[in-house]
Image (tube, rainbow, N blue to C red; front, side, top):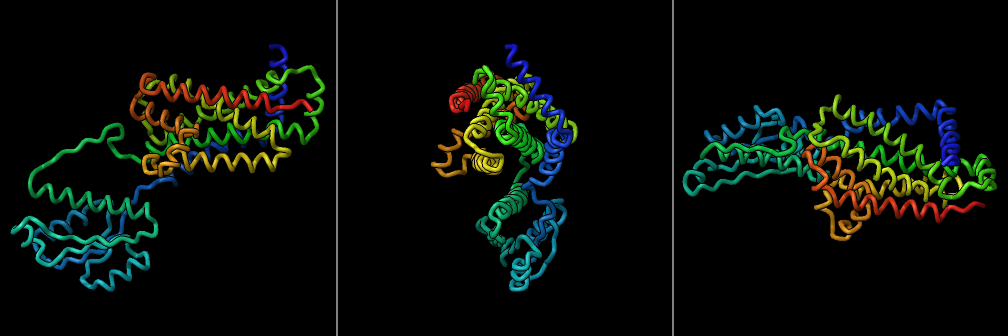
Length: 357
């Protein structure tokens, strides 16, 4: 135990001795959270529309009015010239074109069917999908109002605030970067400055050395997470319905996993450049398979299998469930078991792979 405390003392002295690095460790994740949480937003505000009303009826006028007075839409053109509207779409001057067929009201009154055409620029598939859902939502609401009133209630995120969904995931991403990259550079830096050889000739055991490297990174990760969590709640208004202490239990085991991956990288990399390359390689795979930017349910079957080996996917699910749904241990016990098993495996591999030479 005394040996581990001595290593910890050395590690913290190294961290606090470099003030620029300390500033980067503390300030960089906060700045990234503030920027990314505002930039990573799939909501489309002021969706520009061109409408072609070939019916000129009362019902078509009411539908156009619903789009005109909706805060999510901006009526850019109300013109029957299809070629001109298609040109606007090609030039990105509008995001969508809505065409109401001639005889729309008459057809609805006769056989209760009427055609509305929606033309979208689908180069950006995600944006087109969101725009189509917004337009369909207005049309469906208008159609229902012609018959009866229907009230809808959304669970867990009633305001449909996209930041409440994205900020917890981005916070997990930033903590992951700290856990993997800083830890990966730790032992490699010792190799480059020559202190690794001096440590290797001491009677320090491998597990003591690994623990001495691991614990400071865990503390830094917890501090970073706490700063980000405060920002998420105070600045972005993300709800925190569940037990925050339970969240920290999952955080601890998650950081053990990520730091274990970083320690493993540091044992196989010969210099900091190699360590950074390997760390970013792992992070890119983790991010795109974590469910942060794309739902896991929409991924192909082979990708769904791979997500089961991505620790980010488990902790992102935990973050969103605890903060937005108020989930407890019983609902998330499998995620805890998986993180513990992953942590044991990665730390064991890191200790076994470290060579005192």
